[in-house]
Image (cartoon, rainbow, N blue to C red; front, side, top):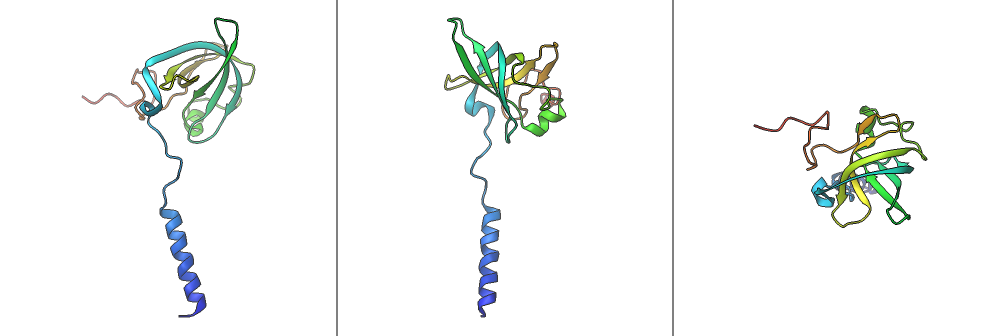
Length: 148
């Protein structure tokens, strides 16, 4: 075999192996990180929004009862689905005060899976994920009906 043939075959094998390898960062189910028995409800000020896959993250400062400020990270759905639901970059701005409803992380950290965000104008936006084990509560407009 010629050197060119050997190189082409090796390159083809390497490409096939790369395409067949699953991504290292796997997507998780709701129940892997969050507890449906620990709902959270609080008001906070948006500090930063990360529009990254597979989930958007909303960083919120919340005034604690002792007067300190706690930084919470709220996990939303993926940016594409949020955009389809009307949650765009111009909707959530740093400095905006919002109300968060969601479910706390199992490890007790200041992270939550967001379900609804209520904006200063009273609009409520669904930011949660569907079909990943999140509680079915009828608030997700795209939630499939319960099987009979």
